[in-house]
Length: 317
Image 1: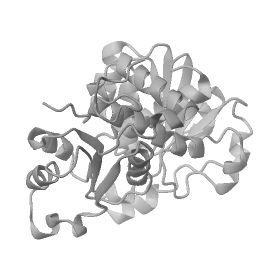
Image 2: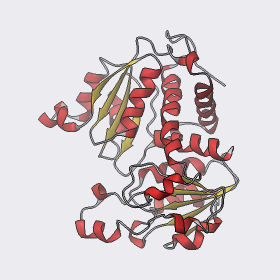
Image 3: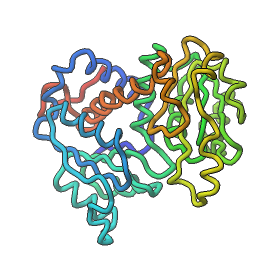
Image 4: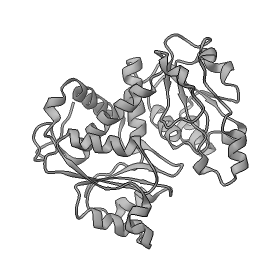
């Protein structure tokens, strides 16, 4: 049976650490990996729009010497004719060696994995999970801080529908000595089930506030998110909440000099372009890291070693 990645908790802490180590090695020795996926094909099945995730998967596979196929919207697939997700995935698994799938419906990648004959990677399902963005975030934190613990992280913006936040909180909760500050409008608070499962069961300290500037001086990491128009049923609610938090150079004057600012992107108004020039802005480095952690993940799920192309053995650290 193929191995899938649907939720970040499908990976052990040791496996996450191994993926980070592999990604670091790819960054240092890219030539060693350039033929690792020869004659292998990645299918990108994106039923909702994406720029970074889809293109980073494609770039990752091409950089490993493989090839890609797929579609970038539901309207360009047989889903527009009424085909079920299960039938689409059954079909594509006849053509490809591994599938990266994004879908607006929560649980759709899990359902796909039940019928696929090749590994399925959840590239985002509704407001639920986004495990490869989480791996990107973890690699970025490791490169920025040198560790995955011993810091205070603030999550700011849409914490209710933000699948990247839900996945990252779940992942970081398995590492030690982290304090969490959740900053959001009351209407967009972190869901109770995330707090119960990831934090309260482990006795992890956290706070909730509506005031970013109050907690900003305490943070080692600030994870900004946009308010997502596509998750709202009421346009008036979106317009009322969309500019709840706007990070500017003036606000950063009170922040720590070694603060790391992350954002899964795309951004709208929540970080001004002037912040891009601040060395604490790590989100463009975060984008680059996404390619390398996805290269490491493809290798793991296909059971490939760098340079063997034939699938003999698993690359381990």
